[in-house]
Image (cartoon, rainbow, N blue to C red; front, top):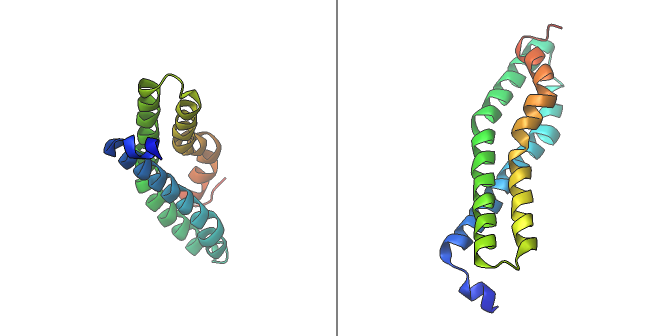
Amino acid sequence: MADLVQTQLPIRLAQTMGLTTAGLLAGASFSFSLVALPRILESPTPLLLQQWKNLYTSGKSFMPPLALLSSSLFFYLASQARSRSPSSADRFWGYVAAGVLALSIVPYTLVFMSGTNARLLGGGER
């Protein structure tokens, strides 16, 4: 309890915002994959491609900045954990892992999804 009381406001704000933005990313990914895409797949092909383009454009506009914000907050928390107490290695590495994982959606999409996305955005041609 004493640790909670001594924690400064910027740390608590960064923790809250980091977890909130990571949760928003997870929720958006979940809703795209398990709610929106199954409904889109029920559409005729021309409509399916237009709906996919709209969904992709929407996600592209907010998910990378949200991932960058979330990971930046976690990296800030990692730097604060290391500077405050050399014995807080677990906390430091936990924040580093959270920062890397939050940002990993961008390279994952570029490396593994770019071919599929390009085909869908191009109208489905092979």
